[in-house]
Length: 315
Figure 1 (cartoon, rainbow, N blue to C red):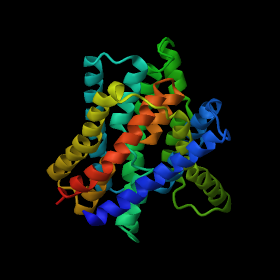
Figure 2: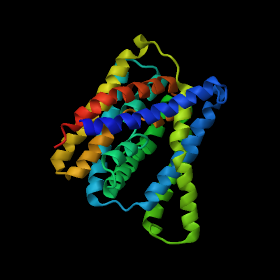
Figure 3: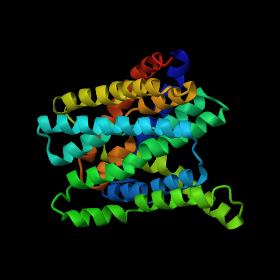
């Protein structure tokens, strides 16, 4: 537990530190509330598409990793159904319903997960590669395919005609990066060409900016929300995100006989706190971004306790 706790604390502290930098910039009026749409678009329309494309274009996943990806997809699908049912029972307003579903289902597998796995498995390139593939395909794909739809449907544009929703979704930069990245992985992966190398290098540098843009966007969205108005859903989100989802993945991994390393990485990825990208996506499409940001911070703090305990259960 001690070996896992220290890198977990470092990774989460780094994220919190970047958010605090954003709060200081906000207090100094260097970044202001009117900049929120800008950071949301930089994340959703620039940095995240660059990360998706460069990751997919460079990877050739094996069968065992694809099984792990499938398990994560199943776990996320189950939690989307559960959160929809809970939100319906609680009669949540549409913007809050969308934010709740996104935050509870999609964890911080890249922003915290990569940093954590690189510290737990130092020098293990296979572990890092597996983490990237599991995260980008297991979380990134459903985030793009379903997360955007959920945010659009429950956001401020709920009166938009169905076909307008579909058109906005199909022609979004994330969908384009997904399709182009998959095509490049089959056609151009391993191709040595100076022009291609420059393109990948530029997009790689853009992708690195994702964590900074996300942190600044979350800092701009953070507001004090009374505990009484968020307590119940915060508790539900903590249980679903930090306990039920990783245990579901661990159970499914045992059923299919997933190798030990892949199981460890899969459970680590699914035990991550709620992703900042879920908060950014909520704000980008009109859901309750402030509420989502508060849940991200809460789950990040609680994960310092739950993550080491969950990993004790991994064989």
